[in-house]
Length: 388
Image 1 (spheres, rainbow, N blue to C red):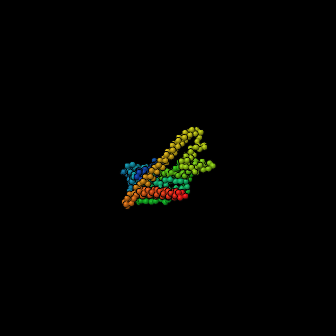
Image 2 (image 1 turned 60 degrees about the vertical axis):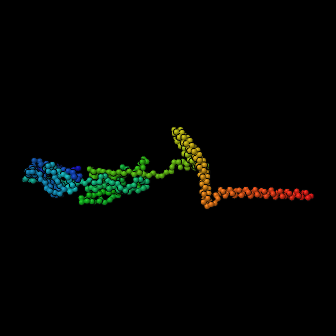
Image 3 (image 1 turned 180 degrees about the horizontal axis):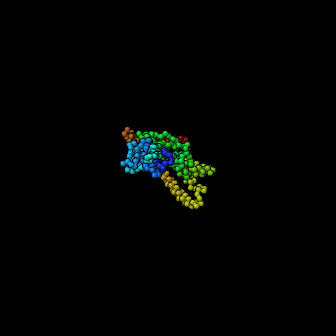
């Protein structure tokens, strides 16, 4: 980019010497080559000299009658490539931050008039950000509608400071969302770090077409020769909704006169829930009714098989429970008997057997006593009859 300046002469306009154009690049990247141009028209006059100044200090002179005609003067930040320089062009190599400044071209004619014309322009040397694209920090991986987004964009060190801007879903962020911070200076060269914040509340319109993704991008730019961006996409959490099966079950129960689930067994309740999911009025369009019916019949058959298996499994579990109970009782009795043996006591089952035998003996004795008493009474009656 060059700056074309209106020309100003230091002599009367009746003289013929004039400057046609002075070209000085506005921005030059650090480490590159810069070319300064000073175009003039002698209109028959003889050229005496062309001189270049930076911030008022001469660093290059071209006099045609001198040998060699080109001559340079030491100046910090200015390094002239003499082989690629002439009366109209001056080439600067490996420019640095000290090269920046105001450059002036001065053209003079020969005697006796020594007409002189001059013009100047400013050049800025740019040190591009040293850390690549800008960095976005402070964000979260997920946001819900109503949450606050508070993030920062930080550009790498540069000279001058780059311009930062925020975009939300491809559109420039509104000014009230921006949070500006002071530029941070660092290093001997005074490199500058730019920081720009973004703060806004997440709303429904930020998630377009149900995508539930929020895209924020930060752009760092410097004039027309530097442009870098960084983008982040964050997921949005949808509001939690009840499962479809639960909502349909609620509708089914509300349309019935009594709650069909109350008082039901586990299997009946399970079947009711499944049927309420597949057998719904207006659950499908006419074109899909056949497919839905076939699918529901298949699933009902599978569920019936599972319920039958569940009943058989319950019986098996009951049998297994009884077997375990009997085994535990047998093991307990065995343990008790072993303990009685160690204590020189009779086992429990032997003691019970003895009690049973004693009860039987008592019953037999009672029966014999009863028969004996009955016989005695019968003999007494016979004796009474004989006496009579």
